[in-house]
Length: 112
Length: 115
Image (cartoon, rainbow over all chains, first blue to last red; front, side, top):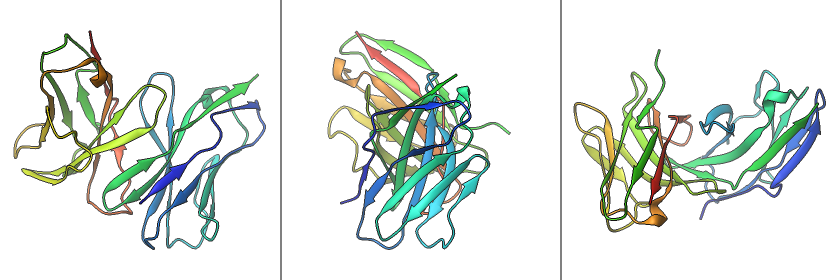
């Protein structure tokens, strides 16, 4: 069965510093995708970054990068130079046969 | 270039009433997914549809819930005889193709409150 684990219910980071949000996953299938979404207090789900299981290089999108360690089954999100607007819930998700499996989320608070 | 549209954004129903949630996918997307988010939890898959076909409904409750994606018009998630436990945010997502490598783009969600 597919499973996504986010072990950090909440995190604080100082503005302008980098922060890593942890995500581990469990699957026996070699083909899957890993995604991160941001959910601000307004409630919408905003796509941030994607990593395919066969991708050799870590994905990057602006200030977001995904630290993909396939052997350890981890897909941590790194946010560089945190901004106040980064305060939100962050969800890791794995896609498998058209379904997304979501973790329980990490609430990030950026302090001024 | 509109994104995924959902309406209504907020819906209040009394126990026993019916709730109809609508989703219009992004232009060019023919794959629609519905997810439910209970308070303080992540999203849980409910159903995956293509035009006029239900592909995977393994996450749908066995009773009272149904979904459709007709040839014309939006996808509809229908909840009959709602109960308080149905109170949640319901998200629709769409993608141009199916498969594990496809990004799903989410709508703003419909917040259902059952009184």
